[in-house]
Length: 98
Image 1 (tube, rainbow, N blue to C red):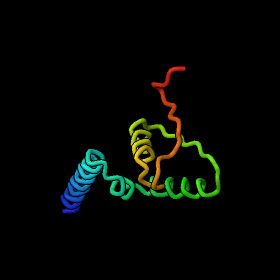
Image 2: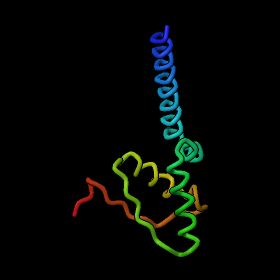
Image 3: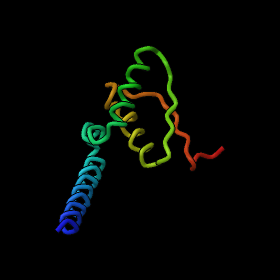
Image 4: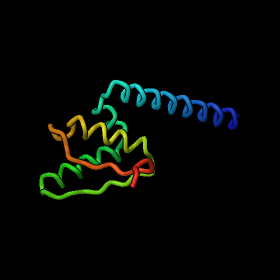
């Protein structure tokens, strides 16, 4: 009985994760930046931090191991979603020629 419940719980979590991933992908395709940020507490924290730095006139360097995450951050900054205007930024990743 216990194994069956664990298996059912595992299947539920897999379905729930698949559903969340589909929602995130939809939000990316629609460029629904509020929804994208809403899915990630890391992005929420990052953009709050960037807003604080911007107000104080400071600059910031953001690292990520994921080029997909960098692309999401870039789209949000490029479209001026968080700050009401475009933000000057430079992207350096593994595809950047030096």
